[in-house]
Length: 161
Image (cartoon, rainbow, N blue to C red; front, side):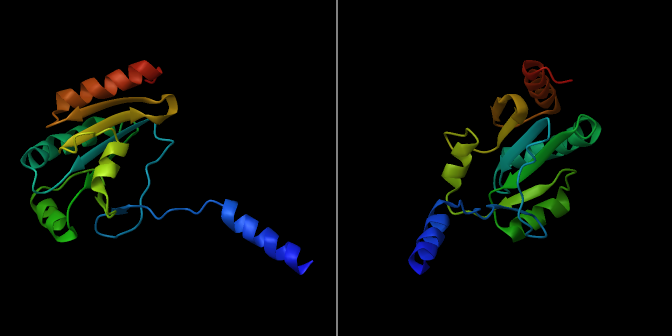
């Protein structure tokens, strides 16, 4: 009986999936973050403070999110590939209206590839609709017009309004 209980406990321990800790934390609080699978459209922007085009696109992205993204129920997040102090300093001079997460993992190349960024260049933005598995990616600087176009294309392919 004791052997059966031990074997059952071992088997349960082996086949029970372990929840991996999030590699993304909310900047400023270090609270673990995950993408909201229920959001009809997600915009994920990979960036760094040392990246000139990243810095240049953020005011336009922030404006777009404030004026259009929130009304369209879009989840938008910037994932910074940088140190906390650098992010804080940059955001003091360039505040944004969408959440900024910090990547805390140790394999940024694999993380970027998981979003479709095969070359590992920044900025890289993914616009996707999880419910219908549609996605568009933009490598390089985004504008409000590019955001409009990419969001409209993803929504159109999914029949979203």
